[in-house]
Image 1: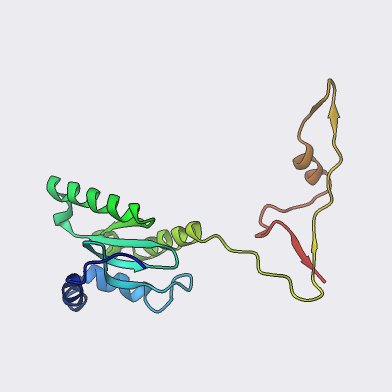
Image 2: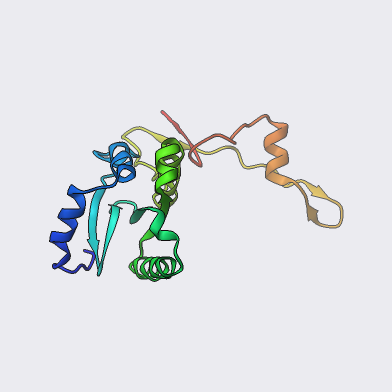
Length: 174
């Protein structure tokens, strides 16, 4: 469980009731497990801060910054805040209001990519009767003086194995 200041709970409720247009717009895109089946919380107290959005599954914090976030003082504050949040093992993504309002698809894509990066797909267990079928092991091709060049890649190309778009390191078989 993440540390938080209980005194911030009431302020977080107020912020949820008074979200900016950009926050509302992004919330409509990420709420209710719409992004990679991940649950997001809005205005989540974390330590002594309140994050705009938090996804526990991906350990991801999303901040939507208005124009006031570009002053020297606020930039310094945001850096300290990000460092604290990162120290808890969380990742912070920051977007401007303008990015959210003008390019919501791009913002959601960045969030999806970060979730995938933080949670690579796991290999599901095999069902009864399934076997793992590995591609054949290539022969070692020797090129003079004991050196081996292009072994696996060359063998796969010669035998027309196209594994470039294969999502798993093996193919399931019956």
